[in-house]
Each structure stands twice: as structure tokens, then as C-alpha cells.
Length: 453
Image 1 (tube, rainbow, N blue to C red):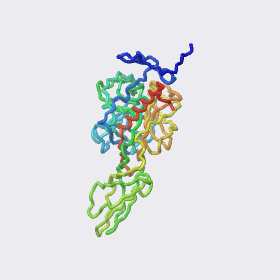
Image 2: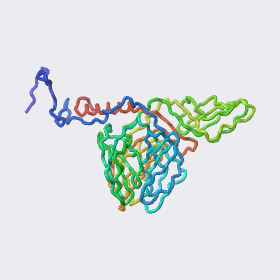
Image 3: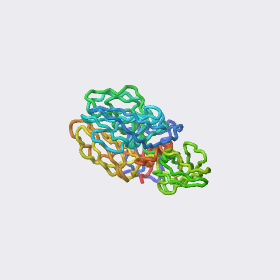
Image 4: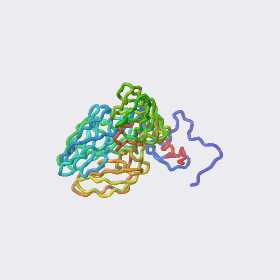
């Protein structure tokens, strides 16, 4: 039946004092300006923005560790000593190489200056992690993460099991990371994901033949983020200066210190030496080139003074155009088959990843017995993912799935023996506000109130 037309403006309201409602329920389909009618756009993922938790330090440590052997068909938590870590922080850990059958699983801050990393051994023989490797350890403060008190169900033997939980404030899509507050022999967290707004999935793995029940009513740390903006332009490095040549008497000498990650146009704000040496002073500092710090020492005595070797200096810099602290990236991947009772590394192109930085991944769906075991950057736009198969049968990961990556563009100093850590302040309030604005705009686009272009 053709629509009737009129040159007069039409009113949707009949003027009653109770008002006019478009749609009786959330499932009624409505729209504006000729858009396809939709149900009420749903989601409260950004309803919990907390102005008091506006910013916090994201720190990436490079730490040489030598864990002891991991027993067969089990999980073992290994203690990493890491000076500077506080008890309330959340932690991510990446191993720089692969070892067949060995998986990097749960991690947690087990105390001040202490990180617990759970390794799983999927084989029938003890595996000793490579000695003296430089692990990347990323920490986040409590201000950047919610917590959730969870009581997971039993996890069957020799498999993985995803369990889903309501966590208010989780947006979808987003990157999700979970820290369990305690270790349980044979049990590990092998992955997490945003299932939908306010719902996360946690994949538990049981490396033993006996069912294990995760401890009830524990408070888990949860990161669920679509990205973290930089709060300011300051980046701080903790730099082990190694061996510095002696400074001759009554003069100044500039010494070159390698600081991986410095840009040629960064500005040095200040340098702090941890100890005093009589007659020796730092009187100047500059970026002498990419990855190179020029420190000018003054010797006011009649003798040569050699700066104390292997001290960790604090170097504060100003970056003219700081990048985001964390970027959310996605990539459609088709991994190859993974053999039984082992781990397998596979390399993928992920556009946007920066060489020598840190990256962590979420698999978008669940496959029983299969999980991610580690992730690392192998070069520009290149990511290596380790898959773990806890079963006795070959498993092929689902093809053409869109994986979610948390990329941290701060150079993580991996492989640089003279570097300790890098700090950047993340602005969680600004990032959440952007997410909320995008969610509102998407809802308005769906209703036809705003053009999609």
C-alpha cells in the first residue's frame, strides 16, 4: 500500500502527559532515516569507568633467568626474582625461545620483587628451561585492572577446559589477560578471551591424569582492554651501563651508553647514578643517536676515576610523539596441525607489530586439549605463537580465525644485556572514554541516527 504524503510536519507524539515510547521492549525493531530496524543496542562494558583509576605505570623488564627442571606430565611454578615488582601488580611473561613440550602458562606476582611463572611439561621426560635466557616480563598496576572473585569447576585430566565468568566492565572485542593468585600443581591458565560484553572465558589446563578443582573464591586479576593511551610524553629507562672507561683528571669525558629503544630525536630530561663516587659527577646527557645515550662525566681530582661497573642508572626522556602504551591488533590466522603431547611454534604476519617489542595473544574460540603456550615478536609485523596439545591425538587449530593481540610498542630491550626496564605511563581513563564514545556512536549508527561513513 503506498505511503500517504503531506507537506505538513508530522508529530510522533499525541501530546499526552505521559510521553511517547518508541518500542515496547528491548527486542522491538526500530530505526531512523531509512536504516534497517534493529533491536535495542546492548552492552554495559564501558559503564564502570572509574575516574579515580586514571593512570598507572606499565613496566617491561628484561630479566635473565635460569629455571630448574619441569617434571613430566605436570606443571611447576618457578620463582623469578625481579627487583621493583610490587605485590599488587599484574604480570605477563614471554619466553624468548621455544622448547618442544614445554609451555609457558600462568604467571603471578607472588610477593615483593618476586614473580611466579608456571611451566607445563606435556612430555614423559623432565624438561629444563634454557639457562640464562632473557625473559620479557610486563607488569601493570592495580589501577589499570579489575578483579573478580571466581570459583571454577573441576578440570579433567590431560586436557584443557574453558570456563566462562561474568566480569563487569569487559568490552568485546578486547584483549584479556588473567592472573590466578595461587599456584596449584598440575593446573595452569593457558589463555583467556572476551566472549561478549561483560563475559570472559578462561582456559584451564590440567597436565595430570587426575581431575583438579581450582581453589574456590579466589580473587583473580583481569585485564580487559581495547588499548591504552600514553598519559604523557615521558619514558623512563633503567639501564645497566656495563663497564665505562675511566675518566681522566680535571676534565670532562662523554661516554657512549647503549639504550635500546631511544629515538634520535628524544630529549634527555635527567640521569640518576645510584651511588656517589667522590670527585666524579655527571654534568651532561644527550641522545647521541638512535639507541645511544651520551653521558658527560666530570673528574675534579688528580687521579683517573672509573665509574662503578654494571650499575643501573635511571634515564628519563621526553618523546616528541609518543605511541600508545598498548595497541589492539587483529589478524586472521590459519595455523598448522599440532602433534600430540607437545608444543609447536608457528610464525604469522601481524601488521602493526614493532620489532623488539612485546606481544600477547588471545585465540578467539575454544578447542578441547589445545591452547596457546607462548607468544613473542620475531621481527617487524612478525609474531611467533606456540600452541600446546595436551592430548594423545593431533589437533589442527581452526582455520581463518581472527586472533586478538595486545601489542606494547615500547621496546622491551630483549637481548640487550645492558638494559633492565622501560616505563611508560598509561592513561586508562582516556582509553576507556574513547571506547565508550565508540560504543555510543556504533549504537547510533545501528539505529540510523548517525551516518556510518
